[in-house]
Image 1 (cartoon, rainbow, N blue to C red):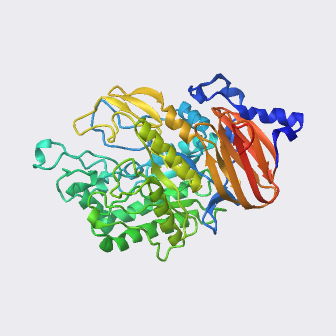
Image 2 (tube, rainbow, N blue to C red; image 1 turned 90 degrees about the vertical axis):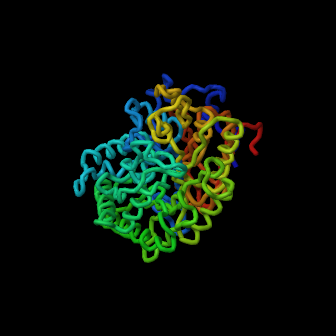
Image 3 (cartoon, rainbow, N blue to C red; image 1 turned 30 degrees about the vertical axis):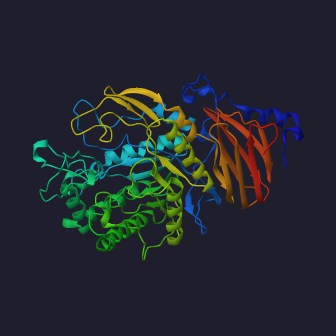
Length: 520
């Protein structure tokens, strides 16, 4: 066991860097003058190839458990523009990437759309792939993995109500969203009016059913587009993996739809793996359940992956319990338990592709802290929704146009003027709490307090001479380190915090950061 009073003077001086800055400083870490004088996270943390271990953990090629923790970014998506004066997305700039690194983010779930990848049937947009590639490279230069997410909401940006008078009593005009290209959006000329949920329009349900039925080969084209993406990024470890389809809708009874749903997933997985053939490693493949958002009576589809090699497959459900109406009366913690139960039965790990909270009331902040504690208790990774949301985003505006008010995400935007209102510090602080980016062996206990910076990590069955890498934010007053089973403990200041490293001696180990007089 290592305490400060047993350290040599030089090691003591080095470790006092862990004291960090006062928790009262709410300035943006990436904006500080010291940014250019400190090493970058990317210089200290390698983005090594990832895979799924036999005991269902996401690990790197050194058999170290990897927690992918970060944020969704929709700047590269193509959304319906419901207000001509307000673009639906806000471009990400270099300051955003610096800020992400300064908040300890290790992964970006990058929203991309089929509509931009294949705007004309059969013609993959190399220019859009180049944009995605550039984002992946910039993220990697900041020590951040990318999960490429084929995003959709209500199937397509091309299904929307043009005239409210078209909608009969009891319905409302439907907004457009994002997803499929216009040529693959087959609606049978049905109504775009909704009865509440965005997928409830008959036109949207028809489009989903044509997709699952592979009408005119449109699902085949979806699979081919994934092949083009996988070919572009084959062998690149900075791409953690591919989220095949965001929130697929169950558009008719699940018992009828399941084989069609599974067939598209199976063909897509096979196409991606063929594109990866010959590479030293293959990226992770993230799959989501099918949810009947519009018509709950249709039921849930949990992909059974019959006949599919489950190597490197990860379940990527979304946990919006106690945040938005999910149709299930489960707590945050109960939802996590359900996810883990289903995933264990399928023989895959869990990574939560989306979660989030969008106001800063005391009750909401307490929910966000509970979510963080639950995430730590289960050693889960995930991506918060989202980095920033513009006034013209379909999530922000009504069918009639942009409303006034503050749009609260990790960065807030004041509408209708698209005014940058700065970081939402209370949520940034929770997200940027201390955590192990990579941990040799298997994590058996993880606790991290976003208020104090107190942190405890325990892990087992670690091989010797494997490097532990922990992120700790600058706001923490945690200044005492206790460790067992570790040697060569070092602290490396970076913008916004520090990277703590140590080597295992083999077997179990513990690392504690504490604000107390003596370690807990």
